[in-house]
Length: 139
Ligand code: NI
Image 1 (cartoon, rainbow, N blue to C red):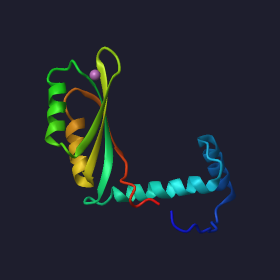
Image 2: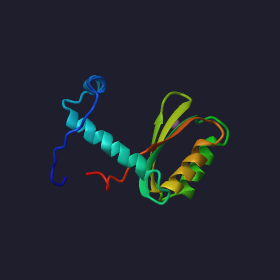
Image 3: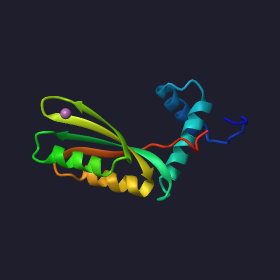
């Protein structure tokens, strides 16, 4: 972190009251850290607007491993996109359902393409791409 500066913000009383309630619920002890987090989140959202930006995303998948061909297709995709898919976490949720979290490190455009391919595989019950960040632009 570089030099820390203080700045004043004008804001409506009711809006600030609502904000303070919200951050208290989330466990923040002061406004500054919550505002820093909001700014960082904004930067990450912006990062994901640039197709060529190098970044990191996670894909969460829930599926029944007994669905015909499904496990095979998902494994093939993960091998095809290695080493961009840097790691995979697999949890057996119950007798049938599996949860997988994949970490994908590449340009935004390609992360989205790979995520779409994984999520659209027949038999995937739930699939979601979550934006993460390399952290380089966050201070
Ligand atoms: Ni499993």
